[in-house]
Image (cartoon, rainbow, N blue to C red; front, side, top):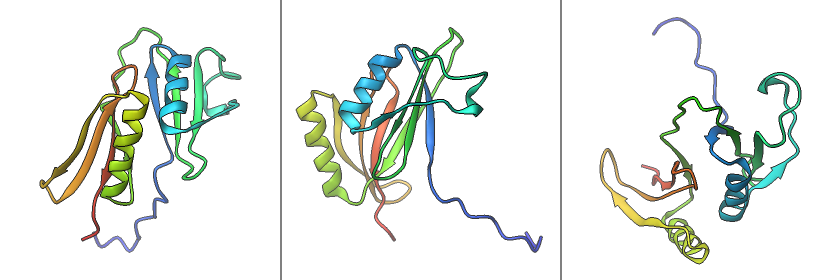
Length: 140
């Protein structure tokens, strides 16, 4: 653009916040399926005072630092189309498919895609129907 200013770097994905119907059910599911650790959570940017223990949960992947916040819905419509997690290779997708099978979590199987480029995905849903995806984009 010729502004003389360079675009600052983004270091990566940090967290996603999902509105769910039952925080405890969803937190237990994410802990069981994705191996996330539940954090004691009181964060000032989440409203007035400490979180309502029944109203929210913060879950952490201790390997990557990715976090998922779960918040109880207040009756207003909310929508999260999907969340995609990157994986190292197609074999890892197959590993996740096998893992989901052992937990009885329905999924669409590993699918190879060609548009807009070659990649592979594994799609499934959380207890509220939020679409989740593991995806591998080979480096081109």
